[in-house]
Image 1: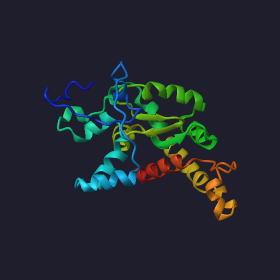
Image 2: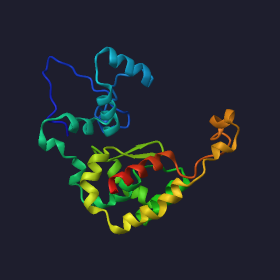
Image 3: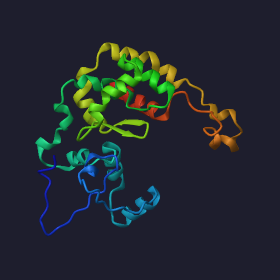
Image 4: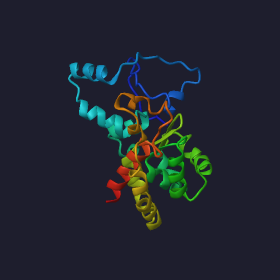
Amino acid sequence: MTDDISCPRDKCILFPVSKFDSVGKLDEQGNSINLSKYNKREFNEMLKLLGDDLSKNNKFESDTKRSFLPFYREITCNLIRKVAKWTKQPNMQELRPALLAGAWNDKCAGDREILEILSGMNCDDYIGALRKWTDIEDAPILVMSNNYHTVNIHDMWNYLYSKITSNDVENIKNYLSVVFNQIDPTFEFPEEQWYMANVLGKKLEYSQSLMHGLIITMVMLR
């Protein structure tokens, strides 16, 4: 897996990774170092003091979802290691619906409906079929609670674009207006209660994650 990642024996390098990343499961004894959590503003201020390039860091974070192997592929000079391991798996076309959705919330009925349209399958069946892609090393799909995200958007589009069908494109076109014409029920409340909308049972029919993912899909298919 990471055999080509090495450092001198007298050095110790710490790589902070997401708790959802497969690298975090390497140590069977569960040995880990808990780092203090800072909010993004504090973290960025400290990086600025170190003279770091925040725009570059933010891009790394966005492109790799804080997963180690996608990050490693971004910085390595080894061309062989630039290729994601999941691309060697059979039946990559199973990832097409996930690619087109980009992200979704499994507990959101509207998101599940769109995923069923894109996959042509019952949503639970498709989620089950995705497990072989989410439970592997260097997984292309990251699962956090009930939220699913493509890890590296560029990787996914580079390797799966040729597998997108005309039917996929038509499905996206037919449902874009449905998703983006939804009325946000938050604004049914007075402004001072907007932050309480979710607690009061007023939620978007389609999640912000799905909308963001579909915007990326529109850009990529333009």
